[in-house]
Image (cartoon, rainbow, N blue to C red; front, side):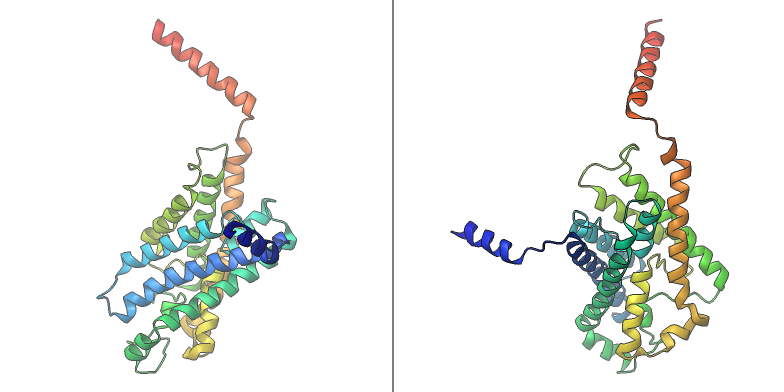
Length: 290
């Protein structure tokens, strides 16, 4: 009886169109990424470092990405990042018509995730700021949701930072998913992709906190603009806001093209690859017998 009720419920509620399923998967995956990632930043900042540190933030985003891929990977591929989606379009792995749907879902999911973090820690925000939500200063909290440049960082260097970091992300993702390369064991892809985020965080986070995701940065930034931080979230850092959007998109294309030109185009066909393996084995046996 229970299984029959479940089947009837599925027949009534299950979505028929794949693009709708993919939209919801990208939305929920990005939501979880922001909830865990920005949530870890909020806990660290609002506790004044007593309940978190830089390493816990890295772990928060790592686990956020990993869980996002587990949630959405089987439905949409769990891009949860417009730069990744653009790279897949360039490589012909995502239809152009689906690109705006994926990106829209990612931005909405990131906005909703930021709203969830703010709601979760609302009382802590009020206690920390005294009710004054600021972008700069000793009690600034806007950096919980979006990236802002370090004082030493120029616009050009910031742009290069995002191109290199996002290019590295996309290149490593393609390597992990490449069936003709070593890849990752089935079901372990989310864990390994999460470790890419950890690697980027511990090596490329000094300049601006490795946003490497236009949706992860702009969605929460828009939320802060309407939630009380105001338009300064766009003007701060010399109008920094566009760098974490354009830089990652360029970086995603660069990473995809580099992997394609350096690795993917040079894979041997399965039959030829097997023949080469046999030749190597024969040579090895001849050497060991001599």
